[in-house]
Length: 397
Image 1 (cartoon, rainbow, N blue to C red):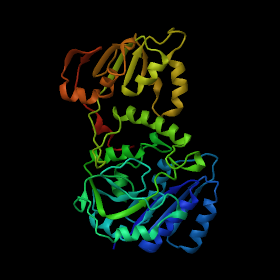
Image 2: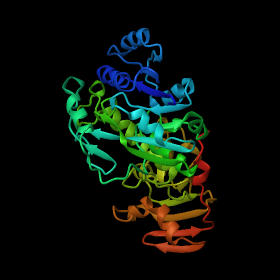
Image 3: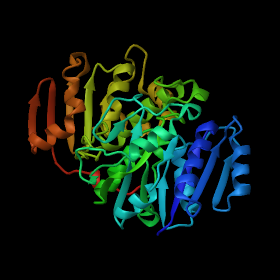
Image 4: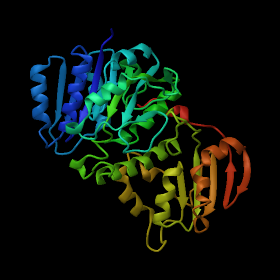
């Protein structure tokens, strides 16, 4: 059997990590490599990793000594580079590896393919057809392992074939295929939306997505991030840290792709066309600039003197949240737009309903756009070219 390198970053998640590590060794044996990274924990994680390393020769451990976290975007790429096997599996530290997980993953893995396990989860998130809601506990100390084993050994009817086309963590890939796509984009550091971004890029490279319905993990659900009590979270309660990073990186995702995250019901990515769009706006204050800026390549307005609030104030506040140089996309209305598509409108006329035109603009243009001038609701379009640019995003440099 081929060997897998399990890649597991963690931060202040010791009891879940211990539970997760033990599941891999108990159910999958000691032949697979495990790479563990402590991202500046304060809960004894590093001391635990040292104990693991002393007794397990097939483990590599790494540590960020601070003073700030690096995040999973950094660690996934770092650990993948250090992996010694040809296959890497991106695994969360709050996941339990069920028996035969490795066999079922490897059964379907080939070059140009990404294979996901099926998640069994307690009902902390809404249900979906790509996972199974079963409550076997939300804390390691209350985990009903025997109940999970009994369920795994029972007759199960998922109304699925052995595999479906979708992707979600945990997922496995050949290491060189991961390197081909350029790894994770630092735009999404420390975490959040980094997975949706790399899945989009894999889709554009024509990678095949496979989810096996015979290989399972039990996932205690976001205990290392979103619901992490060490970051102010709790089961079903988002931590302030998570709210901040998710808000920040949703905006970065829109800046990069021109749309919100999109996928079908099985979590297979949907990538809309990316157009070169310039907004020319009237009566745009700083709050409206914040709402509009991510949705376009460039934005042009009369920033100076608008109630004493200019674009520089917005750039100063927002620039720490993105690697994209905002000073190069926010312009005075005196500059003639060079964009393929120019959209003019008065922000005083924007409301919740017609703002959806902006949100859905990529698909609207794809379905009905053509070179020339047109008007739609409050928007005036000058379309010089319908060239799309999403394929230029498929490799992260």
